[in-house]
Amino acid sequence: MTLLHERVNQKIVFICGAGHSGSTLLGFILGSHSECFYAGETNKTQYFNMKEPSKITKDCKFCGPNCRIWSKVDIKSTIDLYEQLSNITNKRFIIDSTKDLSWLRKQINIMERMDVKLYLIYLLRDGRAVINSRIRKYPDSSVESHIYDWMQHIQLTNNLFDHFQGVKLKIHYEDLAIHPEEVIQKVCKHFDFSYEPTMINFFNFDHHPLGGNSGTQSIITKAQKTTSEGRIQLSNQNTEYYSNHPLNIKLDLRWKQELRPENLMMFDQLTGSLNEELKRE
Image 1: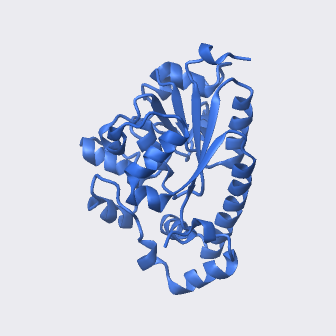
Image 2 (image 1 turned 90 degrees about the vertical axis):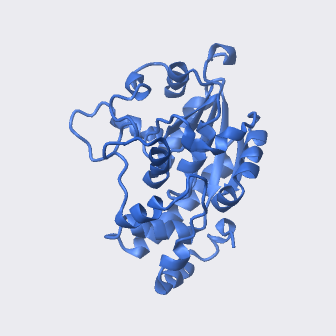
């Protein structure tokens, strides 16, 4: 077993939950800590050695294939991914916001055999907001299929969280957006991180995520007056929304205006009580 003092990587924080729940925002905030690196969705590394071009965005969303971090990662190495990232970045703590539950379980199982501290954050968001975001992003899929996919993912995520053996915490996206300092202080205290007030201004820091929410990432390019050369692409609706978005954290409640009454009714009928814990009204 690798001894803790021999590893550069000492803590891994996994962020789980449904897609479109704010994990990119939370990851950027935690990744702005002086000892943390936000990796984004590490399951994208499985595409690194593909010979044929992939439709899946697999490179750093800001730098592309020549990223000074990810270009140095060797997925065939006997050194685990998180230790490699800590060695490259000189950051002891790695943040991983992968939503693919099979990948997440695999990484947790691997790292449980290492002498490294594992943490899990379950980021909760009202399912109606998530469904609305999915409809906006994938308009060609049926609303019913979006709802069933969400239900299955939430049920499996609940199971993962319940059986996780490390330190774990549930937080609501809505609380994070309304009271970011309070929530991040809670997270830091729960996971034994020192709270750094500058973390909230995540848009001032250098980030190198794989995958993640393009809208949140566009805030960083706007703040730093940089370009992602087409790697961060927004829909017409999101382009308008984020062009007027302030640099500070803003609660997104667009679902209340955008989600059609018949789709709200379908959601309530199909999900039953599954959304009760995730609501913040």
